[in-house]
Image (cartoon, rainbow, N blue to C red):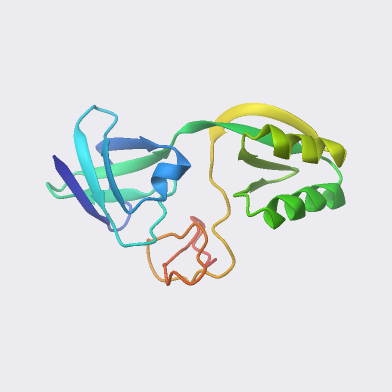
Length: 165
């Protein structure tokens, strides 16, 4: 089994792909398969959250690109920033992971949450798309690790534009 224990340095070209849903990208220990079907084991720093586009270094020197798998999501759309902020507030108040995009929010498909947002006047669509929710406000920048919640974990996070989050 191929072992993966660290991030690849720089912009190394990937020769393999690892397609994972968000829940699996939050696990620092995971037995899975590359897109090629080869079995691999992830043994990353505790609290690491992988993001689409991350590159990992396998024990044999190969570089593996992480691909965010398409998932069943709900997408809230509004041209009214206040209404969208209200939706984000209510989702956050329920500790729901939210992917923020211009004029829209995405979250894991949940009919109860969908009805709540429809009650606020938000238009919703059920979609299949990669899920890259916000990492949280309390993480600290410091390398390639990511944290889904960042709170108290001491995890290292960054976004892919080089900004600390």
